[in-house]
Image 1 (cartoon, one colour):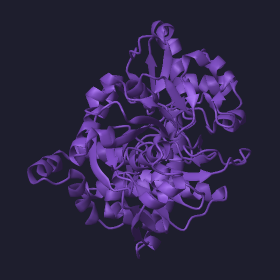
Image 2 (cartoon, one colour):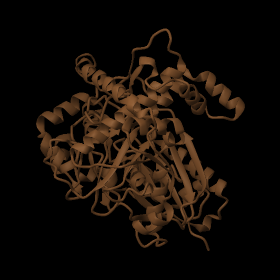
Image 3 (cartoon, rainbow, N blue to C red):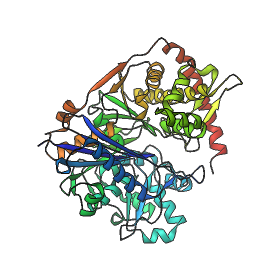
Image 4 (spheres, rainbow, N blue to C red):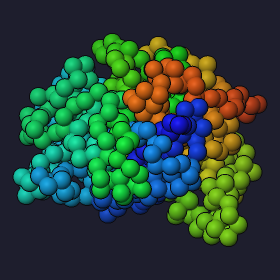
Length: 508
């Protein structure tokens, strides 16, 4: 009887599920989008139940498309975005909408924590280079100070992956590769950090039990199996944070292979042993979903989301044409961008729609289009977004070079990897080949790999990667690469000169 492995990944703007066989072939995939609630420029929320219902719909779509008997699904591994915080009461009911990782309302709480706890100590213990509103600890402190009645009722604070595992199994657990995004977790000793818990005003009892990533939590509960259209047999596995499992799904399981994911955010993944944390270069470091390894994960929070924002706000005609023709609105917009020369005739875009994170953190940063004139049209603006994200990618690679990591190519995944134009722009801007993969949904594939190891289909992650990860295409830099040298400098200067402006005008 064949063994089938299910991956479930909850991202910022959608949940995706996919069913794989043990050769890495995707037999069925499901995706359920949702719209964040953004009542102000600083706020981003989502009802926690939406994560669960979207997961149910995505899994049902994937298994229906695969047409696989439920009894042949051996295991389900779950991953998600980090930082997003869900407070539950003792009955397991969310007490308020999830505070999404993009939410910046806890700025004063972040500043208070940064003042009271040494920055270098924070980095050495948690891998977090700077305390900003992104982290769960800041969000919990905000709830304590602004929603005290809710704070008093909280039984457990969960991240999204933990919430989905709870709904699948009834168990309240986490793992280091997920918990490390909270600012509450000691990544060296793999335990909750007492000093930060005291500062926020909670105890370990308010947090899940810590298990190792890649471990089985248990089987599906009866209600969960019924909701998903499966039986209760499949094991449920802690996958970890989406970037950790995406690294596995890209085959980036050693430090000589670098990968990047362009989904809602753009994130780089570099696998490493525990590094020297005394370096002046503070790149975000996470616990990996691989035993005893770590992961550098510099991030542009609104990479693909900047493109999605533009599509939704200014691409309504393309959305309508796509519906009528059966095409993708992103493809229609990208075709416009392909007709625009590199550099967009002087138009430059800073893609910081919800603050900047890497290589320099600035929660007050904003998105900018600079240099547009009467000659610029929609295609120019689309290409400027694609180029702006690529310029940020190059900045991140330069920061990694400074701490001793050098790469001859970058493996790309996520929705952005489907765009040949965007891949070529990245190759030209960074001056190195961009490599696409047979399975671009690397987080889902990484989940499936962990699921396969946990249930005994594979003996190790390395064995599974050798069988399931395959390269599709290598895209070298074109003759446009020299053109982008000057344009990259223009982007960097604009980014640098506007940094103080953002801090002085959007700090509160």
